[in-house]
Image (tube, rainbow, N blue to C red; front, side, top):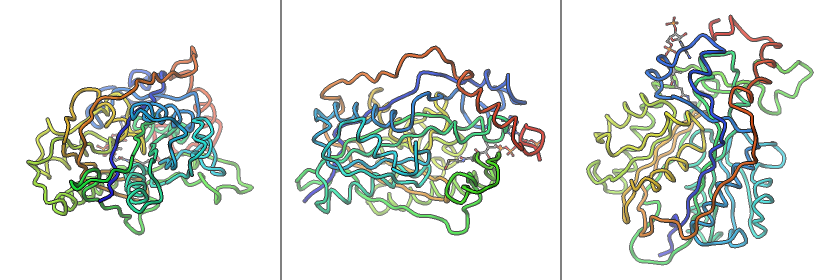
Length: 369
Ligand code: ACO
């Protein structure tokens, strides 16, 4: 049988940090509120583009697999914050990578984007369209955030992660064992950036509608149900019990969502990977960054049974069980290096603060109507 297995992994974490203490200086919030309500302590702010981070994480994943960019025949880039809508961020990333033999496209399923992409690429490999696929999640979400709205600004961050998927012929199942993806109808406006696409190209001035808006508590409630229910279904389809799972790698949106969903699944917290404190919600990038860090920290052993689950704007959801292979160390180390810069996280959001200060920020600037 033909399967798709992960042979390389990588991440690109922008150097500039924006801490909760930094946010305290620009809005009515506190480290205590953010930490206890979300689990986030700090997030990264990128100076480079989404495609630059995608290429850096992708290059590390290719090296970890002992391959070259020319070996890649497909790039699937999960992002809801592409450098440009036309062409795709995948096109820019392909050129920056020198992946001259690859087809490339973006998938926008917001925070479920990486799992959507992993499922699509796996099936393209199984179907024979691809042999060597680079699946990336990369986001520059701070451009979508109104740093004068405390109800959203504290949640998001920038970064990228990637995996290299390769075709293998073998009898024993490997890679994705079971998976599902879905979208709940009629929930588009629960979590959205109204002026982020073509319908926002009007004669009206661009306003605070450029930023992410959401019904936080409603999204929270649905997220717990989506992540727990879809994980239960993929576990049942794989014939795995919760006790069989070595590590769950959930989308990192809020530690309380992760705790509630994994408690419902009956998973011990030692079997759940959480790194939200350092990066916040990087949307399509959270799972590949977390997977890379789980490998770096020795949390994934040869033959490990993994579960992935995510939800995001749409509202989309996706979940998968994944049988890891033998190798848990990179074949070749590629050091990710960002262009040197003296700018801090707070420096990098000054233009945003000025922009949203100039325009029609609703309410009192603290997110209150
Ligand atoms: N600092 C201080 N106070 C705050 C802040 C803040 N940053 N944000 C909100 N508050 C206040 C509110 O104004 C409210 O005050 P009030 O009681 O006086 O009205 C109070 O805190 C409680 O607000 P809630 O919204 O009820 O707080 P909640 O515990 O629900 O947490 C949160 C809010 C963190 C947004 C939570 O609802 C959440 O995580 N929702 C899911 C968000 C999510 O995961 N989105 C996915 C996006 S991914 C994508 O696809 C791009």
